[in-house]
Image 1 (cartoon, rainbow, N blue to C red):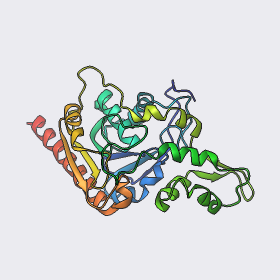
Image 2: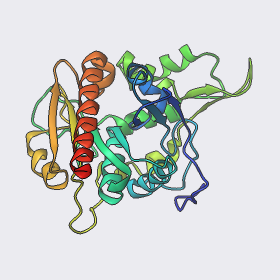
Image 3: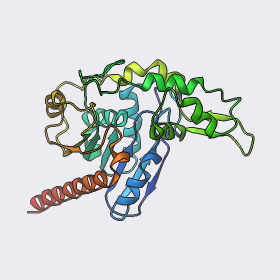
Length: 293
């Protein structure tokens, strides 16, 4: 699959829930749709919740470059196939993909949830603030560590965990990364990453930026912007840019959460998203009533 994908090249995904408005989740860098499973199950009683793997991740095809406009185009093809607008939820890299799509194909969306990311450029190295506790950008080191694992000599997942420990000291983050390490076949099959690590490493700089929107583009639908109170990914200075592109944005900061808000505070995150989804539906029903009059 190339970056100039055709419409018959589909993103991998699965849907939880059988009725109600459709909600679509896209993950961050190194993630998979299944990272959202707990949240999806919490919403499935009243929604159809689709969890997608973005290109170069999970079960979705690999591309020859990593680019937000390309990813948004593939995601737009998927959303268009549903035949109805959706509420789109994106975390980190997935949040930038979601924002890119919203500014180019707003008719595909009922609402937008952006999780701990802003439509701005992030530093390749170092942090965004002078806070000594801010973690420097770790993603380049994560890729190097994953590529350095000797997959041919690997016997168990625990061996891989030990190999990553120095570069990835967080047990939670190591467990997250190792979800993409799989064994082919049964028993003694070879290990492989479900991540296009070579291309992700080469194009990591592209993921730091945010593509220039079309001239005059805004997404005027409802937007929930969720940030971890302990994270530096969303700073006060990001608000002006967010409001300019997404004028109906409400910012919620989740206490005792960093960048992985939905993993660190799942109950609070779920309730926050559920209330937003209810508000979106109430607003749409109100508009329908006005049109009927």
